[in-house]
Image (spheres, rainbow, N blue to C red):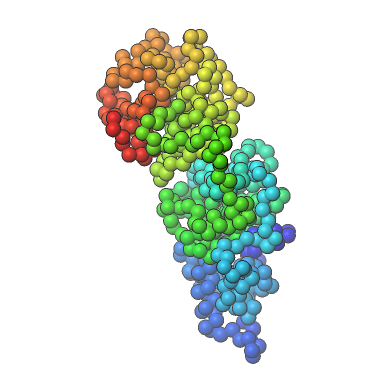
Length: 474
Ligand code: TQI
Ligand code: CA
Ligand code: ZN
Ligand code: ZN
């Protein structure tokens, strides 16, 4: 293994380590004070998480930590606190450019192409499939959005960045250690195992503050997989200590951004005069949406070629292009709905697309007439899945149809007037979705919050209030 191009400037113990022996030559004696200093240093820069202070008490792990320090600074790896090691520890910037607070790997390995693929190879039962996919998706996006590099999720093929959950021994000479200790590791950019990310299968992976937050660890490991080494800034994602941060506060620090842009450059701000359409302003009071749906718990609002995703945990809203999330979808979609735990449907014109586990079903689009909509229906305004009845309602103009997903047939007696069931909804609607038992209808710049059981409008809001914008005059 070529250690220079890999971030494993860090040794995992799989042999029994002897107790550290301190050299006793006259000039370079390691004193009790040095030992104390080294412990403090390691605690500051190399301790991995809360509660691991106790690790340092045990000589085995102290030696392991010394090895990490030695690897990190390219010294001879002895596991012993020798004068050279003492020296780098007292001069923390030794070997690094004086002002750099982040660091890159020797030789600056990076991905030399515009598109880098990643794939999630397996999952763990601690989290659902979607939670894992999303944690990784979010981690990818915090880096991707500051550099001109496209990270593309691929399936069933060899990707540049293969992400997997691994057992203790997993074939790369860096066995995991069960719950606690090492959480994950990543290899810096290169072919083969380069760029790959391994998570310790046995950790208590969560998306919250208790346990080990997968999103946070994935963000850190992706930094390594993109070519970043550790940062000396406490606030940096690349700081080598696991801090319990609330995940809505978790984002790249200035130092992380400087580091990654040093490798990949900055995003070209697009020219205002170019043909590029402007990104819509989500808080424009007159904004309307093409389609809205829940997907895996988050809410997605579509407009033109963009979508906004509102995170279910943090309520953070992020904009991205539709194809960044659902590669095969067109822009300007008409309607979308999710059958929770099953699939997501997207409609445009007389076509529809379905995704299960974020994977497109069927090779391409299908015809909406498969739902037995009559031929005069040329497009759908909104699609709404009703959790209570397991029906998809198709809204077209002032009418709606009801499709029974259990027996896969259109219900008898439709179309009906929208206002006959949904009193107060008198206009054509643009989008609809269900949330916590309430139904939300979007119509132009208005958003109606509808009580399904009481069959009445509870509140009239502005369309973008769901995205955290202030209410506008209605
Ligand atoms: N894994 C270490 C890490 O990713 C492995 C490592 C790579 C390392 N290079 C190193 C350790 C150099 C010491 C020196 O950093 S880990 C954290 C953090 C880990 C640690 O499991 O210890 C995160 C994984 F930063 F919080 F400590 C993810 Cl976020
Ligand atoms: Ca572990
Ligand atoms: Zn591994
Ligand atoms: Zn790290």
